Image (cartoon, rainbow, N blue to C red):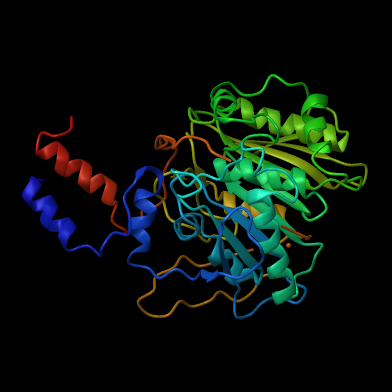
Length: 395
């Protein structure tokens, strides 16, 4: 296509809210689709200066669960929700959704500051702000305190590790996608080193980092770990370190108790004496940095493909929701109002009380696995690349 034709094509698209690195595609997509997330400005002292967004379905389940979802660098709460499909799942299964959002005044790439000591201590900074949001949601919507969960991508995944370590009394379980273990970095240099090389700490050393983060002496949250084997932004060794950290906390052996293929990808599982799964790990073969998307076990799709939201033939959001215990009760699918296209939904479950920054990563390589039919959404980034190439400004 010629540069003139590309520019004319872009001119007819809805106005873009932003175009910067990781969040480019997702932000462009949300311009045409209103977000279901609602912002709350008053929820506590907010020492980490974060924004609070949430979604509560009209048909909230009895004794509802709460899922805390933390976006990656360059993303917003709304763009990651659209990409990963969490509000659609919440609507289908009747659980509440909390999506904290970073501000550029805290971190230029809008990464959660998972390596800043002032933001990752119990009762301090961003961790405290997220805890306060959880408290607000719990009181306002009568959340079942035994059913509070947290998940996140990349810097959001590393921040999920922070929340599980500093507030283990609040969470029943967590899921970390392309993230890092808690306590492996205290400044930007150490953060970069951990991202590129992983952690050489032993399992007991990693476990001690979590044990020292609070005075907790109860049962530890269960955890699900997801990572692409071709991730060059946060190397897969970090997934191994997260698993080692939590195996040590749960007193489990290093060798998996079960290995199986799920949707074509290897999954390792560890359980306790009662047969309850406490640690699981998915390796998404040949996938780069991002959240894996695909057809869910209920034949529904959650989320839309974009930057760091990678079609891989497996729906991580649905599997994570199932791990949280949220998909046990099927609810009637919500029919979206005319003119507001949304993927249909699925999932629900977890506990509560309280009050990061990697550099902006480079867009991940897509999986070579067979792809499901693509959405009709416009890939703005690709159109711009075509235009610049046509103009001789990019090779």
